[in-house]
Image (cartoon, rainbow, N blue to C red; front, side, top):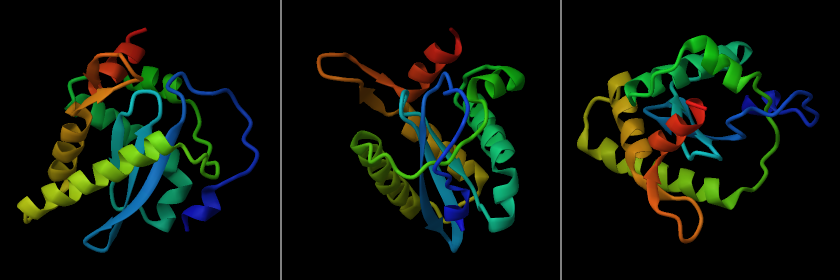
Length: 158
């Protein structure tokens, strides 16, 4: 179903936040998307995505990203965030091994956290993604450690 969203020729300007990579996973027979920003390593989980939602995926992504930013303590106006994001364009994989490795690690962490919780609702997802985004990361060799929330905040405040 998600393959229908992929296009080979996207026109438009690149987002100030750079590219986003998506990875599908299932939780209790529902489809979720782990969406990670390549520039900041910031993660968002789109919950219970159905084929009918593909028409409105831009708004679903924007709303979910905004809610996760608020949950993570990053204050930004929804209209300003929409200007940062621009329109979504789904391309075939670019084989970014750094982001793919990050997503695999985050999905492993999510499966571990799921084993400690009986109920997997929106709060659980937001809390888990907050843990993902609050984990220390390093950009390049020799640079200090930071987290995805701080990296995202620094770009959005420019």
